[in-house]
Length: 320
Ligand code: NAD
Ligand code: UDP
Image (cartoon, rainbow, N blue to C red):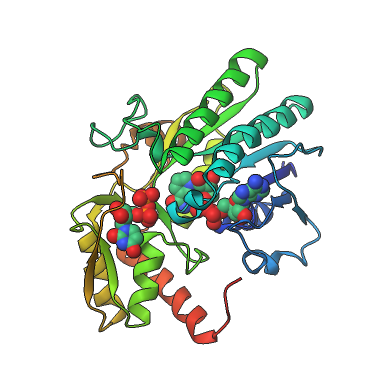
């Protein structure tokens, strides 16, 4: 029998949040999207506004929220280095104060709550690939710390609410994810390279491009979120969600240039401070407990993402 659940998605107007809202509606649930539009946009969810089971609430989760829901997906937080470093104090606040507010809400209404954590909790890792048991190598006082330490503290809060108050928690450690609805100016590598290539502008490689990342297509990640939320009662995570396929940034640039047929030249810019040298998820835990693994290979995901940005740039619509 289908049970219609009331789900809140904080950060629901962002890249991942909007895909999650759509998926939950398609699965027959009530969705409350909570977002202050810091990096998210109405454009991402405008197609959902007509759906009577979808509600949009403009709200900053660093302030308390009083609603009645069964499940909370806590995604609110800028994800791209450019955005999370613009107002670093707010970045720590959304992770710490925001998580406390959402955990307090979950406690009051006895909701299950999932945290969108990150591979950044591993910092610049000395263990490769990264397993959930690795404690990480994180600079506490650098330009990425507001995000990395904010997310680490959020994980601590989730586990303390679980131990102290018996909250039902799920913690996902998300590795670099890409796809349609990334903001064209949000500075992350996949959107940057595709937009630059489509405009025949120089493709900006930071450092020598030898650093690696593992790129997961958004549909695969959202499937992981849903499986995690529905996983057995005692399973809390943290669990890595990402695609183990590992590529250098130079390989990504070359691939994007080829696939777009672009005339862009490759230019080298300084490597940002504390930029992790390598990153690849060990997803054995997700395979074992969630029966989950990514299905979309990089070429296929890039094709869909390139088509999305191509349409967006041709439409001449200014992203808001
Ligand atoms: P995004 O920037 O597109 O979305 C974040 C959303 O949160 C935006 O809609 C923004 O307006 C909203 N938001 C920010 N501060 C808020 C606040 N105080 N109150 C309410 N809403 C607020 O980023 P995304 O890629 O969709 O990431 C979503 C979540 O997943 C983030 O928590 C991010 O840290 C995490 N994550 C993403 C990735 C990735 O590769 N996309 C990787 C690791 C972790
Ligand atoms: N990067 C790059 N050119 C860009 C944007 C990013 O070479 O225009 C590099 C960046 O230095 C990092 C990697 O691509 O090594 C991934 O960056 P992103 O901001 O997408 O995410 P991160 O994994 O660093 O949080």
